[in-house]
Structure formats: C-alpha cells, structure tokens
Image 1 (cartoon, rainbow, N blue to C red):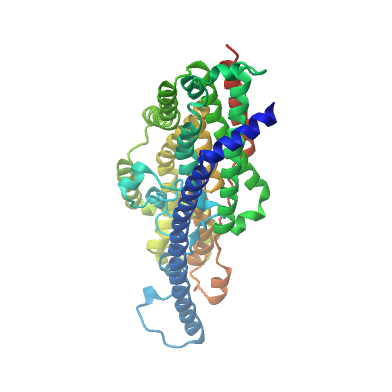
Image 2: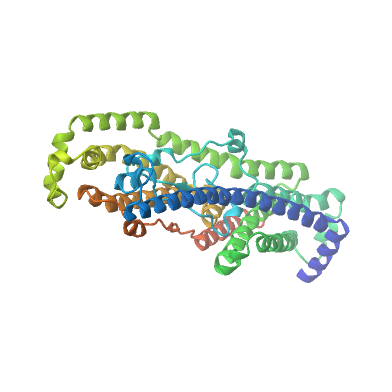
Length: 465
C-alpha cells in the first residue's frame, strides 16, 4: 500500500509542479544564503590579510634596523624608538593573534559580525578584552544575517507548512475523503504515509542542494565527512520536527485555514518568541556589569598603584631576586615600575573581570539549559559551533590571547630587568600565536536529542483518535 501511495503522491506532486517549485525555491534560497555567508568570510579573510601584510612590512623594517644596529651602522630616529630596546618591541611591535575562519564558517555568521578576529596584545595594558566588539549596522543586528543557518531555521519551516498544512483537510473540503476512508487503510495511516513521502522528498531535495552548495563554496569541508553527515542529519531532524507538527495539526484540527494559522503560530512561538524570551530572562537574571563603570574602577586602581610604586617595587624585587641581581634600583625606570605593579594590578582587577566573565557564563549556561524548549535554539547553537562562530569560540579566542599575552610579556621582562639589548636572535625566539579550536560542537548529541523530541511529541500528541 505504501508503494501505491508513493506512486500516486509522486505523480500528484509532479503534475501540480510542487516538487519543481520547491526545488527552485530551496535552491535559490540556499545558494544566495551561501553566497552571502561566503562574502562575510571573504571580508574576514581580506581584513586578516591586510593586517598580516602590515604586520610583515613593519616587522621587516624592524628586523633590518636591528641588523644595522648589531653591525654598528648609524640608525636614524630617537633612541626610544629603536627596536634594540625590549620595551620598544613590546609596545611598538606587538605580535599578531589571529582567529582564521573554519571551512564551514560560511554556513552561520553567528557572532562573527560582532567580534574581532585579530588582536595585537602589547606589554602595556592587558584589559583589551573589554574592547572586543566591533561597530556594526544596528539594522543588521535586528534582522540577522541571511546565511544558511537563517534559511534552515527560519524560512524552510514556512515552506514545510505551505507543503503540508492542508493534506487531510483538502480531501475533506473537496469531498474525496469518503473515497479514502473506503480504502483498506485507516485515515491515520494514510496521512502518516503521505507525510513520510513528502518528508523524504523535501529532505532529499534540501540535502542534495546543500551538499552541492558546500562543494561549490568550500571543498575543504569535504575532508571532514563525519561533521558533514552530522550537519545533514541535524537539518533533517529539524525538518522532521515540522512535519511532525503538521501531522498533529492535520489530525487534531483538520481545517485548512485553522491548520495554516496554527502552524504559523507554532512557527512564531518556537522560532521567535521562545528564543527571545529565554534571552531576555537570561539578561534579566544575570545582568552584565557596566563596562564603563568597570573601566573607571580599573583606572582608579592604576592610579592608586602608581602612587605606591616604590613600595611595590621593593616587594616585587624581594619576590623575584633573580631580576634584582647585579642591578641598582636607581637604574630602574617606568617599565620596571610598571611590571612590578602589574602583579598587584592583576590581583586587584581580577575580581572585576571575573564578575564580568561569570555573568556571561551564567547567561550561556541558562540558555544552554533551556535550549531544549525550542528546536530552533538547538539547531542555531549547533550550526554556530560547526561554523566556529559561536560566542563560546570568541570567548575562548579571547582567553587564548590572554594566555599568549602573558607568554609574550614573560619573554621580554627578563631582558628588560637584565638591562640587555634586544637582538636578532631574540627576534627569532619570540613567542608566536597559534589559535586552536577547543570548543566541541557535539552535533551528534544534538541530532539524537532532536530525533528523541520528535518521537516523544509524536507519541504524546499523534496518537489515533
């Protein structure tokens, strides 16, 4: 019986041109979204390339100057700009920390339009993490980015609703439902099989177009077949959720206009209202401290530390006798005092920064705890993690830059206290930043959760009348 319904449904969809229309609409949406997402990635790569080129040019000039100094040749410019001074290197020639896009970054813009992808931490000042956001178009923030994630989560469910809302009610309104009931199959089974067939057609079309698009825009992504398979199954499980909703509404309501209104209402609730409500509750329960107040408090701590520099320097040299050996305290200048007070500064500002980070983590945990209230949240979080554009990725990038900043300072600090010159040899020994994607996407767990949600909903609400 299933094969008979399959054959009939296929002929019906072909004659009504539904499959053809569906194919071209989905193709246009996904191709345009991929193109748009890829443009964002290209801009990101272009910005990084410009910064890398400037960095290389500046480093080349600095290295050439160092070679001249070591050869004893005359070098133009004031002494405090010469790269032979370690703090000149640390302040005027900082290393570059870059977060390159992943092979699938074009599928979800995520937070990549709000945070920077490169940073040059200097030896002076370590609170650059407070200024990681970039100025962007507020209209774009309001409506989001038209990428594959937007198409999958927001637009395709509307196509599924248009594709399924009146399957049973149409037969009733046309007067052909009695003929169906007279067949050796229950209305429940008939509708279920019709929706299964449409789900298979819809999934096959979407998966095929998505696969071709990924091949066109990112051949590198084909290397990780495991992640791609998870991505396709994640999308399929999300489509299945909306087909399950259509099945339940068709069975329980069985009126075309009411079916359409109910499904659109569910779309608004699941895709827009619930995620926005959870986000607002998270902001209300765990408000982020004012960054302006935090910066003012940090400045006050700096001013207090500057007033006690002599006392702080004595304590610092007692705790680090290796830096004080063979040196006269009177020879120490601004940078020596700065590094001596840096530890005190870190200890006093740590509670402020921790409070800021703690509230962010609490918000993220709250959203993660309630993500199961809406499949749209699960899919959005998963796609952002696959694309490496989630807020967790940028927070981890920030953390890695902090770690590198300490490594960078710790290399230059002994050279300063030993009152040595920075040399070409030191240049080639300088620490380099390598970003690592340390965030797990857990896509297979989310696929399992979505399929489980579909099964539970079907068992509870989709039973026979």
